[in-house]
Length: 330
Image (cartoon, rainbow, N blue to C red; front, side, top):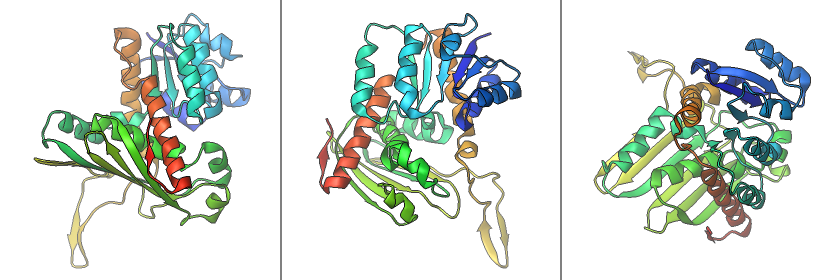
């Protein structure tokens, strides 16, 4: 049985622990600098808590490592795991700085260890179906891509101040999806943002409402719309429009039941209101992909380069917002 160690013991670490178990792999252990948190998570999954990251990375029972720690530790743990010869699945983003991510990329040269970045939305069945339809040519030439991503409620201001901001924390998923569906690199970006939801987010130096326009070298366009508040639930949709038609992914609902009566017409259940519910399948499929990389030699489905390029786009978006200009993406 393939053994996976998790570095980190927070909410997303528990999601990965459950996905490891659901895929028939073994959770070989957990490490967190908060020993009590590591012990609690380990106890919930009947495994052990490692005393140190070195112990986790060099244990014979560990075949791969999931990094689910704070963003500022990702680079150090990626390098440590790679040097220990352990395949890596690291949560996004690689770092809050593209320059530091580039330093990490340079340090990894010559180390033949697979590294996957945790852009789980690529594995969402509905989004993945849109990308597959575009690649198969079902809509002809892709001309315009629309991505809508709205959270039910804003995060606390203290989280915002250490998250890297909306572009690196939230919209970075959409930058990755844009690259994934477009099939080519963005060359220009124009970003707009406002603080319309929570003044404290603005005081922390960020925006809570944003839209960007992206252009590729072929001329294909992509619009991304983000908001930190959607009173009706977790709103995640995508629409790819092409010369021969359109393909889109809508929000999944808890059930497919429709109700119609004298005072309502085609009333559907409300949207899911938590990202872990909306993307439960994607996290399971993401771990399944990682396990195939470890045991079957598949190339990582989402590479370090993918994570690096999404971070470059996020920094270009912030520059566009600050300078109020269209920015070339290098």
